[in-house]
Each structure stands twice: as C-alpha cells, then as structure tokens.
Length: 411
Image 1 (cartoon, helix red, strand yellow):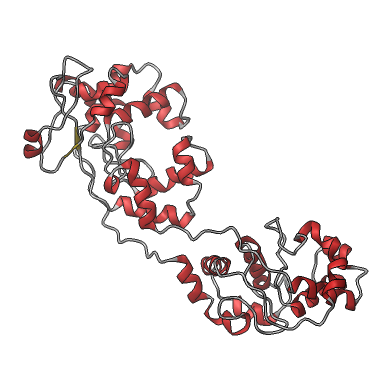
Image 2: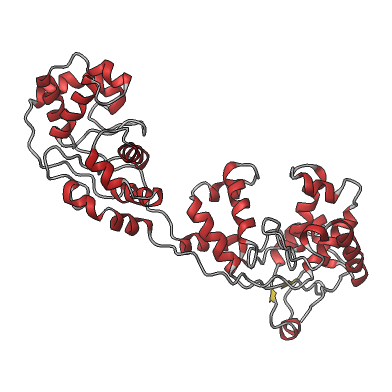
C-alpha cells in the first residue's frame, strides 16, 4: 500500500512514528528520527520529508525529463550498473543530486542529467517522488557459494602435509616449513614453482592444477598456523653462523624475522633447505642478483653455519588476521545501513534489493578512493574482492522496505 508523507508547516517539528500509519502500511518500516530532527531541523535535505502531492507530481515531471532514461520512471533500473532508486531515502537522494550538480561527484552522465540549472526545489521534488515509489523486488539469484577461506585453505593444502608437516612445520630434512611467512611472499614463491621460474619438477606438477583462489586460501591457512621451529637436525655451527649472517640481517632481520614482506623470514626454517637455497643463489640456479652478490663468496661450511643459526631462531607469527565472514561483514554494514540493508537514517542509503553489480562497483570505488567517504573508506579497506562479491549478492537478495517518516505536532 502506498503511503504518502504528510507535510508540516513547521519544519523544526518533532517527527514520530504513528501507530495509525503502521497499521495502514504494514509493509512499511517507520523510523523514529527525533534525534535527527532535533539536530538538523531546517536542513535543506530534510525538506524532502515535507513535500506535498503537488510537489511530488512536479518531481515526476523532472524524473521524466532527466532521470527515467537510466533509472526508469518507476525508479527500477534495467541496467545492472545503474542503481534502483525507487523507495530510496529522499534526503540521501537530494544530497547526492546536489553533489552531482556541484561537480563534487564526477560522473559525467549524472552531471549532464542533473544540469546546473536544476533548482533545489526541483531536486527536492524529484527526490521525494522516487522516495515515495515502491522499492524494487530482491534478486532471485542463488547466493554465491561462500566458505571459510581458512578451512578451504586447509582442505586445499591436504596433500602438502605429507612433505611440509600437517600444520606447515616441516619434519623432513631438506623440506621447508611454511609457517611464519607472510601470505604475499609464500604466494609469490608458489606461483614461481607453478610457472617453472623456480626449478622443481615435483612442485610444478603438484601445483599445476591449483587455482589462484586455492593458492590464496592455502597461504592464508599457513600464515594463521602457530609459528614453530622445525625439529630437523642442523649440521652447522650456530655461533659461527651468527657472525657470518651479519650481511643477511638488513633484508631478513637480525634474528631471521623479516620486516619486509618481499623478503622471507628465515627463523626456525629447516637448515638443510636453507643451505640448499643459498647454494642455489650462489651457483646461479636461483636467479636473484642481490642474493647472488651477498652469498657469492660463501663456502659450503659457512652456508651450513648460517643455516644452523637461522634454524635455531624462534619464528614470529605474521601479522595476519582471520578474514571476517560475510555474516560478520553484514553485521558491520547494517549498523549504518539498517537491518538487511533497510536504512532508517534519512541520510544513509538503503542497500536492500539493489543491483549486485552496482553495489560491487560502488564498494570498489570506495576502496580505491575514486568515491570518497571517510566512513566507507575505513570499511572498504578490509574488503577483498570475494568479500565485495558476497556482500553485494547478499544485499541484492534482501527485501526492500519503504520507510515512512511521519511529522506530528511539536510537544
């Protein structure tokens, strides 16, 4: 049932939910915005809550001339990258339209549609018009298959345990531990084995069919495992190795814990593996000019000593947190955008039943700062591409509910 907002002659009036309106509009969500009204009485964007039916009719004429081509006259866009705006919060629409008109938001198509000659009254009326329409229906597409990336990584790493240890701590001499390494470094190493840049036919064969998604989950799984020293034997002299390793500290850390994600930590690593890797750099079997220059003059005994020293050091846990699940991200988003994306704050947009493609585009724009908001920048920085895809799909499937703001006489 359509529910029109009533206009009050006093713009600073307290706005309260009406039981009668709730009964008449069972599908609408009525929001108590007493605090918002008290703090922002007289604000331009709140004029959209006080429009008359005649002004809404004028807003429809503006929509026909400037908006319907992309957003539809019913506010439901047929274009996946263009947002639905039917039932959207009118003050929010007004704020965004003014931003396009002033050039604060730089999308040329919108700037051309809004045009600088459109008055605040026109923007108020068209915002109220679209805000009073029935919102879009939720997407019927099935939810994307989303699992815990750590558990997925553990499953994908199942065959790795035979050589590298069940939890990534090697028990086999000559085989590296995979714990204590930042994900970006381990990912690079695995991709180099996969491509053949690092010469190991067995590793290349094992990794040949592993997808990038699985690799990402594998390195995350190992980064979150307890960093422990290997229990394999060391043939060298640790004391001599400490002195000989002085040249390595600038890149790999004094105790073998690297402060640079591009350089691996060596603390707690298998000594036989470390020695073999250093000899490979020295002899040119591994290609890295910096490493070759540092180790070129090392004897086999010195290399064994260095390896023994690093194997005896305690590895450090990488600064990696377990990613939030989609449900946990939703809880954070709902704090501002309302339960299931049905915002009850007139200045914050509803997300429910929005095009998933559009939501993905916007979240990525916030993450890259192409679209600016301090709050959204803080939220989007922690989002992976998979997080964004899952969040967008979630909100696209939620039922959109209109919000009715009912002005009553001041107390």
